[in-house]
Image 1 (tube, rainbow, N blue to C red):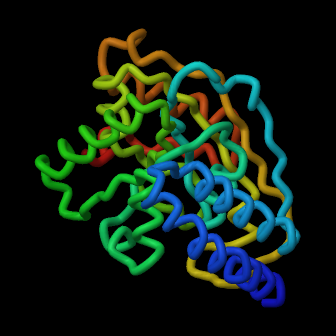
Image 2 (cartoon, rainbow, N blue to C red):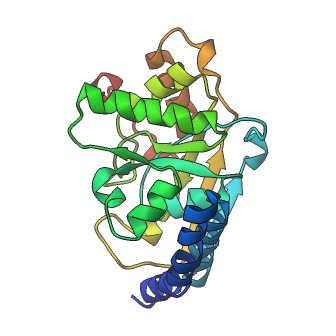
Length: 245
């Protein structure tokens, strides 16, 4: 439990001053970059102090001249800190609306142009989220999404949600498949106990949505890329027809 306490303590020690300094700065200037950089440092340093090391491969594959949609598998609550720490430039993400409404934290999420998502699954909500995401991409900000829609309970790949692929086809933004493994043993689903370890993150070459006739074809290509960077036991391929909307 000591590693979890170290992680949380560092988050609090760095997070409170960052919020006090940079949230008002964002309000006054409209410049969110200092807040984002402070958040990234807070996350990466908390991981290091808790004995977590990032082993990143393929960062040279990430385009530097346009915003991308990073599409990753999801095995642990440490996955978002890992990606935010490693992705070049600034990234937004889809966020549960309830988190966007939290005091202070919610303000930071909104200033960072994170995109609120309702759990209703309605078509209207999906269309609103897609439109907001397209606006974020148009500003040159990346979007990060966990394409399974939830953390895997046993680290094996789950069926993909179709929403991120609808966004990719609508926006034309390159899709960068990302494979994460190792975090599932550092912080297991349903546990608050952290363990030192290595988080392996592989960034695959970008995939152009325009090269595919349908979002299902794009989904299959992204799935194959993500699976290629995972240990064999994590590459379970359930029937994609079970994927959500």
